[in-house]
Image (cartoon, rainbow, N blue to C red; front, side):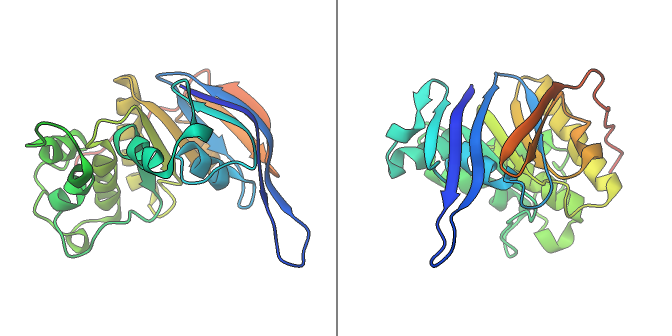
Length: 234
């Protein structure tokens, strides 16, 4: 699904030396994998995630997504790929405060060209255990529940790839465990997931860990026995 070859990202600073956020990244991720990209703050992991999600472009190297050379995609084509093929989950949820859980989840469907979108938002919320919270606003939900709404929003267009950037960073350990249980269930059903985290315990729930330091992949290993997360009753 994902092929990165020699990806480098350089930021130029006025009056200063260029900053290499990523250096010669070569990485392949296949359909159905659950990969953690692990690194400390400033290691380049979020820059890598932005490139994977077509939110940024590399300074050098080649990124192919499902065989498509992304360098040849127009801005409009990139937006279509993000809407149809990629689901995003962020640390800070990014929910609209004055709208219900269902309305938040249905937002990506505004740009959908599907023949029918009826019931997709409800189905996505039910898949993360929030079928009984569809009318609740974010302020009426716990942090863990808000993140599950965000996951449902990422899933509503049934994307090929789910990208999660520090999805447990604002959660307590119990809520983080619930979120990881959802990710594991999604992966077991065939979803490809790439998760960025600084937390080694969270990474151990994944089936493969790629470690990044100072913009370089320094290790890439399969997890023999991923830690099993069990979602607690709501």
